[in-house]
Amino acid sequence: MRVWQDGKWRNSGIHEELISTPAFQFGFGLFETILVQNGQAIDLEDHFRRLARSIAQLDIGANCSLDMQQLRETVLLSLRQSENKKEVLKIIAYRTEKQWETLLLLRPYPYARQDYERGFSLRQSGSLRNAHSSLVYHKTLNYLENYLERQKARRDGCDDCFFLNAAGILTECTAANLFILSKGELITSPVSAGLLPGIARLKLLDSASSIGLAVKETPIGMAMLREADMVLLTNALYGVMPVSQIDGRCYAFDLSLVDKMNEVLDRGL
Image (cartoon, rainbow, N blue to C red):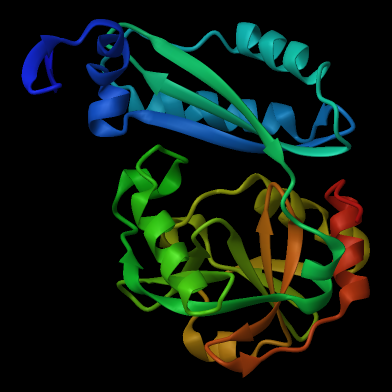
C-alpha cells in the first residue's frame, strides 16, 4: 500500500501497520469504557465478557480471537500505576488483517457531585436508531453518529440527546441507557428496541429490588416519557445520573434515591 505524502506517492512505511487494517479503513473495532477507583477497575469482568461476546458475534468466519487472559493481566498491571482516585480506562480492541490488537488509554474522570445535583439536560435527536442494525448492540468504533449528535446537543446547551427508533420507541442516549420512574416502577425499553446492553443498565435492573423498586423492560413512548415521575440515565462512568430537563420541559428528581442507586452500583459519590 502507498500513501500520498509530501506531493508524491510513497510506500506507507510505519503507517502501513495501522492504515491498512480493517479497523482504520472500516471502523472494525470495539471499545469498553471503564471506571477506575483507587486503582480498581469497576465491573471489569462484565466489560471483558461483553467485549469477548462482541468479538465472537462480529468477527464471523474468522479463526481469530483476543487473548482475554493476557488482556486482563495487562490491564491489572497498568492499573497498579494509576495515580488518581478516579480515572477512566478505555480499552480499544481493533482488527488487523490477521488478529486482534488492543490499546489502553487513561484519562481523568470528568464528572463531579455538582452534575448530579443539577441533573442532565436532554433533547431529542433528529436521527433514528435502527433496531435491525447489528452495530447498535455493540460498542464499535463506528461511533461517529453518536459523537456528532452529542456535539449538536452540547452546541444547543444540552448534556446529551436521546434517540427514538422507527416505531417511535425511546431507545437510549449517545453515551447512556435511559430509564423512567413511574408510580414506583423503574422502566427501560428492551434491548431489542435498538439499544446497547449497558453494564450499568443490567446491574441496575438486577439490583433495583434491593432498594424497593420494581423493574420492567417495556417500550417507552413519548407519552410515557412526558408523564414520568423521574428520568434517569445510566452508564459505566457516572452510574445513575438524574435528568432535570428534556426539550425545555423540567423534571423533578430525588437525589437521595439516585444516591441509593449509585451505592448498589458501587459508584458512591
